[in-house]
Image 1 (cartoon, helix red, strand yellow):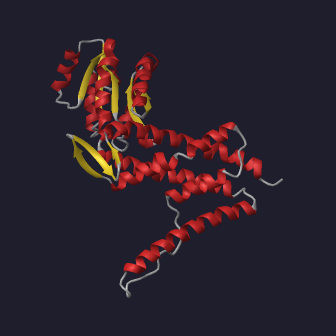
Image 2 (cartoon, one colour; image 1 turned 60 degrees about the vertical axis):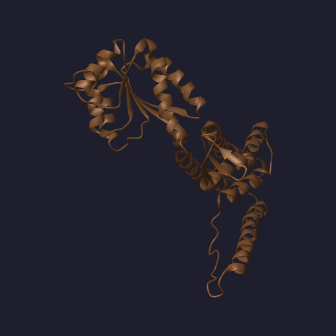
Image 3 (cartoon, rainbow, N blue to C red; image 1 turned 180 degrees about the vertical axis):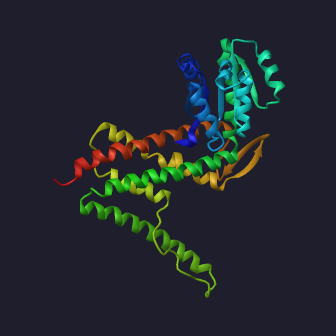
Amino acid sequence: MKLLEYRIAWIDDQPDKAQGYKDRIATLLGRYGFELDINWISNEDHLQVFLAELVKHDNYDMIMVDWKLGQMVTGGTGGASVAHSIRAQHSTATIIFYSAAEPKILRSEIAGKLIDGVFCVNRMHFYEEASPLIKASVKRFADFNAMRGLFLAAVAEFDELIRGAIFKAYASLPADRQQIVVNQLLDERITYATTQAKEASEHARPSDFAKVIKAIQPGSGELYRCLVTILGFANPSPEYSQAVNKLNKYAEEVLLPRNDMAHLREVEKNGKKLLVRGDREWDAAKFDGLRHALADHHDNLQYIKNRLVDELVAVIKPN
């Protein structure tokens, strides 16, 4: 899921030697609820393509560069040329150079080209010096407005996964099971619309009342409950049961926080910023857990759509 990826463009002509760094960074990001996604650039052709596309696809959280690779740019003068080329594409990503040379030497060359947002670390202490920079960049995702956007966008993506699983299963259900699914959607919407219409009619001006719904457009909760109903038609394996049990937590772990994020007010309590809705409070410390929950449910929904629906259909489809 794009929203939970931490994207690094990693420029190194020997990427196998950087695997140890990569693994430690992946572990670090995992603790914050992010999955590491790396675009390895390992030769001059790759570098030129990367630079050419950067202006259109500047969605990297960080760019790592082995200082020696400045020579990959024709006519280049060391790592500073790479930094200059990246900034020329208007990229705002943080750039980290690593080298066996003293960082002050690298900084001196970069300063001469007036390039901002570039950090230099020693290869021998790469993780220790790079990890604080990564942690700092991750903190922006703990911003309240960023979390609001993250949840709203994530649930929109989940809706499509759930909708796809429903349609995939529905096409192979027996007619009586298909009718159960249709009845649930219609009954739930009728109940909701009836309540809304009743409340509106009690307060609306007599000349202002209009039709409430022209066509059903199921919301996130309706789609979720529809999928739960479909998957409840069978229980073919322990893995199936485990995935359904995870799905049963979707309303509490995803929809409830999403709804809160859309309506929360920001307050300050004992000098600490909080998002509050009713008796529920959300703060930066809880956001890591929320991001983990989004990642887990994303993987579970993918598993349901790509595998469990097939298991269900194989069990209940008429011969």
